[in-house]
Amino acid sequence: MAPVIEKNPTVAKVNASPTGMWIMAGIISLVILAVALFSFMNFDPYVNQVLALKGDADRGRAIFQANCVVCHGIQADGYIGPSLWGVSQRRSQSHIIHQVVSGQTPPMPQFEPNPQEMADLLDYLKTL
Image (tube, rainbow, N blue to C red; front, side, top):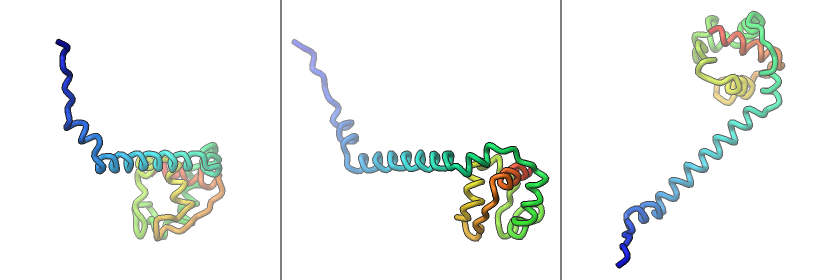
């Protein structure tokens, strides 16, 4: 007599549940969205231009003092805006660029430095 292979109906039910399928579809959608956003940030011509330049921290400090101290404080330790100490370790350079030029986090204003100024500002932020 041939051996009988039993199927586990519990596993089939769990895999076929509508809730499980919706959860999986949601997870897949989030992954696709994250990949698209990451790709957009890394292929932005302005971002690529900034990242290709060598920044100067002294010029970046001057740009910071002229544009950022009102909210981030003279020592970049926060006031209206958050402290920027260690921001280069917490956020990618692309993320920082996007934050500065978009102003998407109120009350952060939109700031449009030219690519060299942005590279200088990034270099200054690395010193914090």
